Length: 327
Picture 1 (cartoon, rainbow, N blue to C red):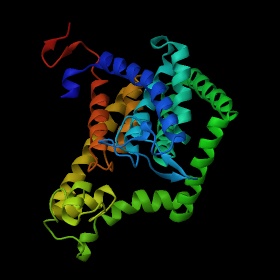
Picture 2 (picture 1 turned 90 degrees about the vertical axis):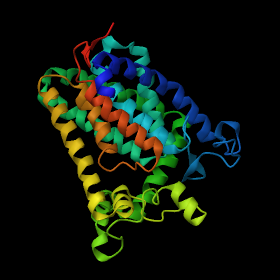
Picture 3 (picture 1 turned 120 degrees about the vertical axis):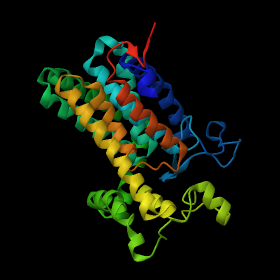
Picture 4 (picture 1 turned 180 degrees about the horizontal axis):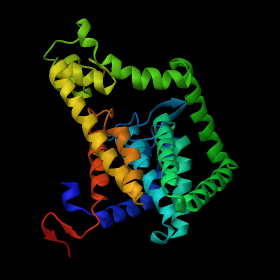
């Protein structure tokens, strides 16, 4: 429906709003990062006094921003990154001062979030940004300017105590997690690729053929069945799907998600080859959520649907959408 109603200009307008919003969002997560969990800015859903932050490092918590949990803020910045990169290539579409401020906000949000997921998400977008230059060398100058501008902003932020403290907490979290998971190879091999393999443990009798039932792998399902928040099936997405649906329906669901991801990749790459970078850059975020995003959490599911819809809508270059002419 998103792609049937919206077109490319709508997506660009949404992108401008997201870029603008990233600036006050960073101010908010900075307040949450440096405030105790009992502070009003950290109150959880329903006025929970224990706070909405999630365990991070060095006594600091991962801030949720305007969302109920930290993954919402991470997904928001993951969506903002492709738009920020895109507007660096098309600076006439957005005021330069706003773009610089949004870039600083994105760079500051990475350590403030204490999230490796956000760090990797921005790195993936940067990789897609670089691949685009191979197909359209005319953008190389703008890309180098964007990277140089980001480096200058990062250098300026690095001289502030505000940024240094957050960076120390982020680094501590990064190092402790890498030690637990066996370095970068362990993160990619065990956490990402390993979860794919663990999804098929039903062959060894772990999951019944028809699954344990829809919703059992969610927090709500766990609370209803056990009275506490825990992972009754699995924390990773593919094992949860197989656990809930069983090998037949679960595998079909996984294949559908892979097929949609492949379809978007082919379409976006085709646009890239003719000089249209917007779908390609948005794809960098969509591919993080579509194949293996944890859809048991509503915020992740919402961003997955939104990102896929925006990729498709960004390919609609005409004003004739769904049989009706837009005013």
